[in-house]
Length: 339
Image 1 (spheres, rainbow, N blue to C red):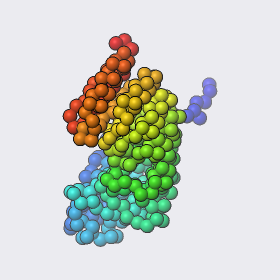
Image 2 (image 1 turned 30 degrees about the vertical axis):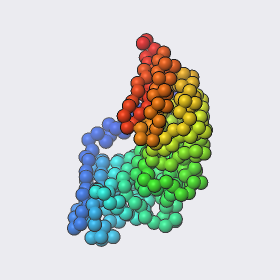
Image 3 (image 1 turned 180 degrees about the horizontal axis):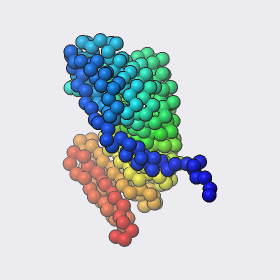
Image 4 (image 1 turned 135 degrees about the vertical axis):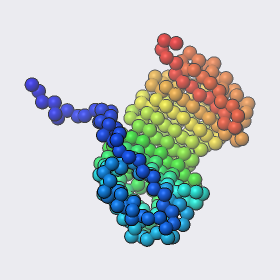
């Protein structure tokens, strides 16, 4: 009988087995407030083998009161834990809290079983070498699948994001920013890495300034990407060049199942509408397409004409619905072949 032990494992089957492994693990939320007992949490993470998911909620003034050695011990204990699979670090309240990025790098370097990391409104601080260490740590990470990064600007993280695109296990990436990046070359390299990833299936870019030539470059890179299944872009502008590049990408791409564009503004609405209609009519894989514009910045008549154009041209293949109000646009869902 032939030995099948050397055959590659199906990634989907591998993930199903992993979900079964962590089904019985506990979820823990730690409120990091002034005068809280950090060492109690450190002990818990080092001794409790049933903790699978951890959320660190950082409150205002906690770091002013916290002992720096205790903060490091907290991240060290999370890294040393063999059971933690998901880690969320989140600022509570309106103020963004700051933490040393070196502590995060140390934690990720030790946490070889970590599959999901979310950083929500936390400002990771450090110098250029500290962020280079984060990038090197991510590049070597053996199991990370999901990374959500909600920060002020991509600038310090661009090298780390580029490294994340090369993680062979990465499946989902979400980047949300509140300020545009100043380093356009770094932003371009980071997005290039994500767009050419061999494993990434879901990419969400929220208020990341990817307009004009950068957006066009993203579209060109995705033309030959057969791995990415869902693409979500929110809070940007679409000019004629970027829009035509996106439409051409939809025509050429054979892997994308869901594509959502939530735009602040779109120029040349009729011409781009025609280009997207042609792309949707040609594409055989896309199941869901949405293009939504900010009603406060868009011409109502142009949007209405685009809605009618989509409905009349694509109703043989898609269920086309219109969205009105402050957010206006078109939603297309592919019809079943029987219908």
